[in-house]
Amino acid sequence: MKKIAFIFPGQGSQSIGMGKEFFENSDLAREMVSNASKRLGINFEELLFTENSNLEKTEFTQPAILLVSSIANAIFKSKCNIVPTFALGHSLGEFSALVSVGALDYLDAVELVNKRGLFMNEACAGAGAGMMALLGLEDGVVEEICEAQRLEGKKVWAANYNIDGQLVLAGLKSDLESLVDVFKSAGAKRAIVLNMSVASHCPLLQSAVAPLESELHKFLKDSFIAPVVSNVTTNEYNTKEEAIKLLAEQLTKPVLYKQSITKYDGAVDCFIEFGNGAVLKGLNKKLTTPTYNVNSIESLNAVLEALNA
Image (cartoon, rainbow, N blue to C red; front, side, top):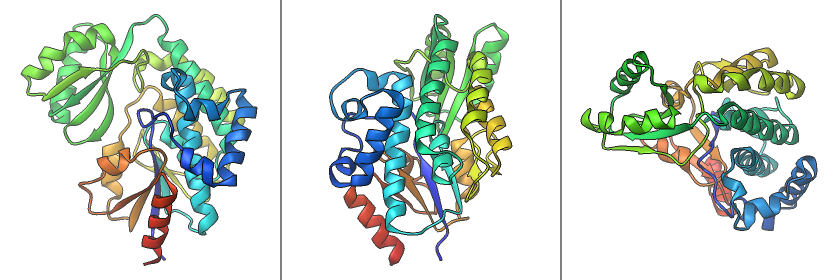
């Protein structure tokens, strides 16, 4: 029996048309989209498949990505009886991971992350928050610069550790913009302030913690069929109590994706990414453990064939 990890992408993986092939070819997918639309009063068929500006708004982005990831995982599960060794997600993807191991119902999760997006928006409203993508610097160099700048009163933090030489920062947009030349002088190949008004995974989201905790208590279950790896600690957890604590902390602490995936490289026979695109497969390309992705009927069939080989 192969050891398999389920992995799930976060914000930034969205695109118009995501999940459409599943929707057109699967009764299960159509049912899940219909149920999510009824639950939230959002027309997910329109949100996912037609040109619109809402898909880039975090309160819509988060449930859309989670829904498509959950559809891909549900269709995969309908074709085989594989239970993962563990599940892991990148930021928002940790909620999709919880759905995959039975700790969240997908409809509850769609509502939960819609609210999470609203809480994040409220926490950053009027603050001038933003994020920056950095390429070409070692983690330690970035951390030293951020710490020195915070001592001077600037609000900048490392938010996402994606791969070696690729970090995302969060903080005040004006402070991030003022540091573009600082990072380039330190050797950064690119330092790009992103078109975002939310600063994820940093202390600017502190006011979102309590309302998210309240919603987590409401929706999470103590019924994990497999553990989930925490973005905050890189350790596995499998209880509702741990999930509430760690998902609340995840709002204000960095995503340790690189550290997590490196830690478990070799512990499983393969990673399978569920959801739009192949973002995590791209991040994982330097690993010894292969990563497959399920984002279409063709890729689903290819993964099933590979697992049966």
